[in-house]
Length: 521
Image (cartoon, rainbow, N blue to C red):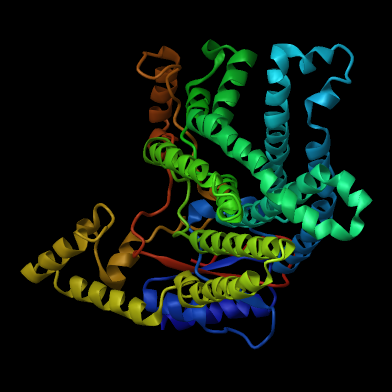
């Protein structure tokens, strides 16, 4: 009855007159959540998009009121813009390959010495590393552009969706970086011969392809010696801290401002995943054509394991939980990179006249594409929501634990649950519908601006006496307002830790009134 009432109320509010483009319907059992999230709730097409709600900390509340149709229009226009930028991206990459050399730097007045310094060793060093550094500096601006597009223009509604968008777009630009660099570098090296013999374009391109491995070895060495230390140092956070110290003295900053300066960071998946995938694609592309690149790829991933393991264990602190939603996409893109490497090697064999070997290798990319489809169908799609069978199983266990509050068998079940990665404090949780109702927090899916309490005044410095702050706290206690205020500590949040206590399903209508938001709890 409770589920039926909530569903009727939600569908009526969306299909009829509504002032919201996003709403949340809260249930007290997993079976109702799974049923509501899986079943079509209305016969009108593109009216109601239903799914399991994201975690409250994952929601970007400033974008929650944007209608789905408006978001799709903005996403399509952004994709068109990025496709045009992708075509134009050829020119700066080709310019880097052509002009990032000591010979062109020497043409700058006062830079003639670069050709003769060190007996020519400086010139060789510049020719080897300047194109790599220029490329890395160029692609560093891409994630910033993608994040601004996803968050401020497309107005995506969750942080995980923003990071997933960045992951996909950054990855495809990395594919462009790789293959445009290969093609532009190979063409530039053989440009004279191609102009003399245009019909031999493919054969000359195939012959010059292995020579580009030196460029990518330099790229991997630069990422090992400079990229990973920058990740280890958290150069972005370090730069912000130094800039803040340069602009204002720490003595003039409040304790909250200092806490904000040193607050933990979340893993930026949209930045980190594509960087790893670029190295994977480089190794896949050249592993057979020129195996000398394999040891450098091994060194990179070996040091990456050390750096990122330390960062994840001791530095990064999750801001939200998305249940590993980006892992299937990262796996699919890895297999896509393998397919690109296989096709590149087959094309290389054709340019060398090895047609029989190329024909025999053609099933490889087909098999990889089939594997991508298989993983997506059998693992990625089912992982997006809980099955009705498993939801009912969890509800039966919860109902049994609620009915056997003091039995020894209940303690045995709780002990066994604690051994399989059960959240801390589960044995203290009350089970069943009534237990979940008692634990329900009505503010979980309300906008923070509507529920956030005033902050308690802090001492000017932690651990030091502050007479002014104590005087304010005493006055607030006299007014009986102090206990209603929030500590506002770093990492504090208002979400409920027990995932079984409440489950919500967002109902996102396609068309809605331009103002307001309805949250049904």
